[in-house]
Image 1 (cartoon, each protein chain N blue to C red):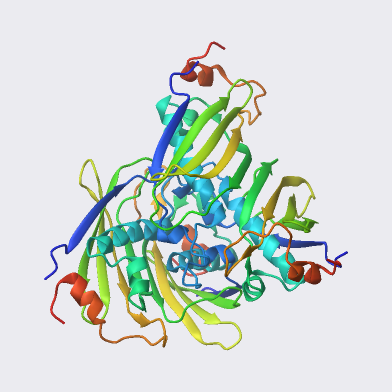
Image 2 (cartoon, rainbow over the protein chains, first blue to last red):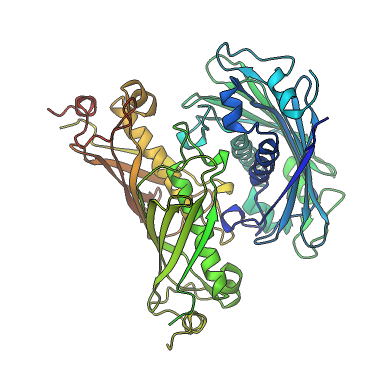
Length: 138
Length: 138
Length: 138
Length: 138
């Protein structure tokens, strides 16, 4: 079992993230998810540069976002990313909460699969490097 | 039944849509979906400005994207948007195909609900204006 | 003279800010400038929400960016924003430096003018509210 | 002298390009400029993929945008890009006009310099490949 199954960052939406309804445009949530995902992957030393160095790209093959409450300019928000699956693909779940009240604002997930950067072949079993970083036996 | 249940646009990814893997960054697909959604809504004269004029905002409450093949710079792509549900919420499905080969690249959906712009109350039944524009009896 | 003529933030480029050359896409610098500008304006309690409340929009009418060195993924960067003109228009200069070495990476400026939100008329002299917030006599 | 000194595209701002003032966010103009620049470079068969194939990257070292009138949702806009300098660096000027009225909305420029992709050295004279594509004697 990994020591760091979950990680949380705090961010505040910028002016350029807003749309004409004065709330964060729905597509920008994927940028917030990515910031939390990269921070989580840094905890196991397997963020984007380390992925490349290991010979695998990890393209996203599936994302979902469920919007519960709108996000507003300058509102501090906590984004929690959690490893949920890793054996055959990497699934990370996300939850966004208002930093002050703890009220849930959003939830979602992303699924990534390993692709060998030389052969361009998709891996149907996660390569050992991911399991080693997660501290699970392969 | 609406006359225009479905609509298709053609677009080509721009340089600024690419990420370091030289493919379109996954979050930018929501911008492509939105372009197809707005073009579809224009077919029934109920795009963003008409929504505002009707007194309802239609925030997105759920999106999903399943990525089948990567998109590349300058690759012509067809994006089809189709009305799937409208009675209680507006569900639109999306499919992206390579314009030359017809190969499927992506599929996904979005779900929107009507919110009264005065009371800020979410509507659990779609307001008559949507059904009229769609040409379905309410 | 304002007490806070200048303000500095630190940020690190995200994965989605990169382009295929593996450096930050040049257009994203305007998002970094905006984050520094909003932080500076918060120091005088005249950020975007306070601008709206004062009855003036402050659209940007001129921007310039001079790129000295590329920005890379995860590189901590300091962005300094400085008030340079305020009597007839608001000019803010920007300078980005590598947080570790202090090496200069970018410089630029933005110019904004006040527009009365009721009459939509551009103001050729800055409204008193800006000068009051800046602590300069009008 | 190049046959195609200038090229024009037509585009319409998308919903996700707008900010809370219901106009296009100022930073998105650099995306419109880029679309016009790439279309211009395609006229001389020297767009981003051909640049890479020729062994040179052409990073942008200077951009300027002067905003004359706001851009609105769905407003057809013509963006003209024109080669202005090429001997030592590549300067392209931009002009945006309302497609219906011809009213000028924006002008600006970008400056790029060639960088040898192997040595990473900046070229103080444009490499022959650019001049050949432009049809000027080097």
